[in-house]
Length: 232
Length: 240
Image (tube, rainbow over all chains, first blue to last red; front, side, top):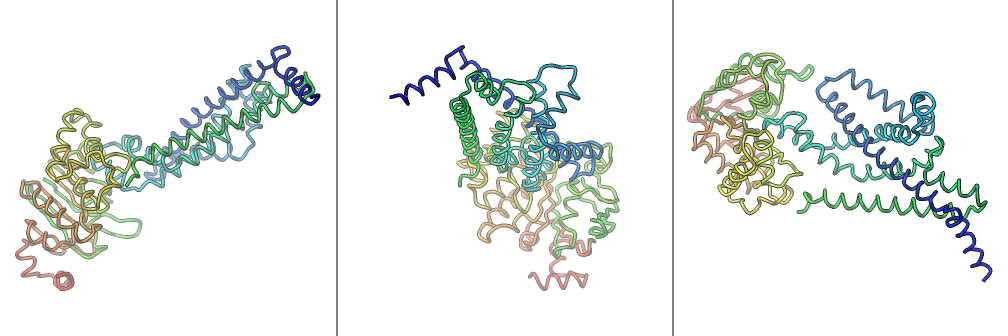
């Protein structure tokens, strides 16, 4: 009986008193906004870089751009994301106090490096015959890429992309370094007021788990839809 | 219609085509035969610039197509190509495979393109496969779709790169049948093939290529009954 009373009390302290559940809601909101926006940015950066790298490899053109992007991938993949976050905040975007925005940009640029390599691998795996067929019908290089090669490349790399976005979602937990109230920071804020660790940590662990599970379900669904053309 | 002047093509140190000159007139059905590695596929692929010539000129309907000033995409709309491996778009169903290029390039409206595609599919007896995906078709069906996909662009010439070489034997006939019909309709065709029967029946001229050169050019009659070059005599003795 005493055990349940204690639990009820802890629950009350963690969520109800001073409307502390608001920390978690605010944290969830920031985590989702950061992850979604960074993912979107990562995809856009990733696609552009992957296409330019592939075009460079196939045609030998775009040498300078390709060199810049090689450097970019090397630097981004070679340094910790926390460091990139701190450098963005304290060195590059010193004129801005919008930590969420800076976090989104840093995570997006970071993710773009990984996504570009994933998509590049996917493009390389599409048979050259597909491109040749498109070009032989009079489609331009970009039309062929957009309508024929990229959809097939995406299908090939969906599982790897899913992995990347799951990793990104969890990685956003370090945005607290910039003072952003994300899920992880929310738990810590509540703990510093209640001195109770179980409820806050368990709560955000479950929320992360649910989000990741939802994301992997979403990717399974996408894989099934893309697999449509494999029916035989 | 197509004129090739002094065409050379090399891959790094390997000279695949050596100073080829040739002229193809409207309505001709040129069949190119020769041993593997003779450069016949490379020659065909140079005609629509899938391979960029190392030197020489290729002219199509009065335009030099391997010149920087020429927009090759526009030229290719008039040159259909059929590949050994079919190369249907795996992510598109059969109907979309056929309508993709004409609609994307705004040559036909969606309705026009679909009506034309269905008529073409009707003609090859595959109208019921319009919504199927390439992976659901047999090799012969895929190749016939690939041919009508090229035809949907209303090309002036059709290039065939060993169109039956990847097919099971029992499916070769249906593809050759369609190509013969096409020839009878007056289409200008350039065909790289190992099908000697087709060369004899359909070809207006047969070219024998070896070591990157056109070794012999003759009418089908002459080609098979009176081969002059020793290499051709040797080749024919092996394939016939």
